[in-house]
Amino acid sequence: MKQIKIGTCIPGTKVVEWLPHMIKEGFETVSINFHMSLEGVVLEELAKQVKDILGDSGVEVSCLGFYCNPLQYPDHKKTLEHCIDVANLFGASIVSTFAGALEGRPVEESIPVFREVFRDLEKRAADNNVKIGIENCPMGGNWHSATCNIGFNPKAWEMMFNEVPGNNIGLEWEPAHQLVQLIDPIPQLKQWVNKVVHIHGKDANVDMDAVRRFGVYGASRFAVERTPGFGDTDWRHIISILHYGGYQGDISIEGYHDPIYSGEWEMTSQIHALNYLKWCRGGEFVPNPWDR
Image (cartoon, rainbow, N blue to C red; front, side, top):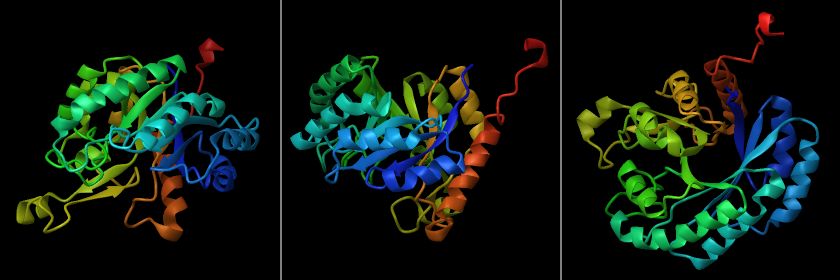
């Protein structure tokens, strides 16, 4: 059994500045993320800088993320292709993204375009020996009016992976995005673990009293995203399911969302999550004395 490593997500424009501190704090992996644009960053140059910073630390880049809408914007698809082509320069085996959407349209209407775009992207990923992980974030959309990602619900996953069945595409999954839909993440992960290629470490609190009093149409907020260790999910159970399913990747803590431990408390929150998730996985590996 391979130990599941615990890492953190860093914005691509901040990675050179922040990465040395994350290494010092004990994170074991890093995910480098961009949203809708590379913001002028030249990935080939960034890869060299990151490699120099990592040195012999043992910390790995597990994932290069470019979260975009490749179904609607050809330039997004082109940039995503570039990320797939250069991911190996970072040592990353995963490229994470959104499934895209026809903005403002029902999920079903995006499926034919998803098939066309992601069959091409999945083949490109296979040629580069990386896997595409589609994040399960609704991005403020819903089934009848998607924003930039149809890949937020298992009903969509069934359609998506039926149209693009290749081995080099799967889910970048986290429980928070399911909890805010009032989906129980535990049975879902049991069913879908074989399609999970990357895990985001983010949780949520669901206030069922607010649901019962005000419903789910926005009159009152009933769910907030939390850093692991402060949310509703039992991560011991999550990690056990991942092991049973043969998951070989890491958990990348996606900070910067917790409504309480934010701002000057951000790193306090992330270090707590790091220590909590290490505890949930059983701590550090200790060899059996009889196997030495």
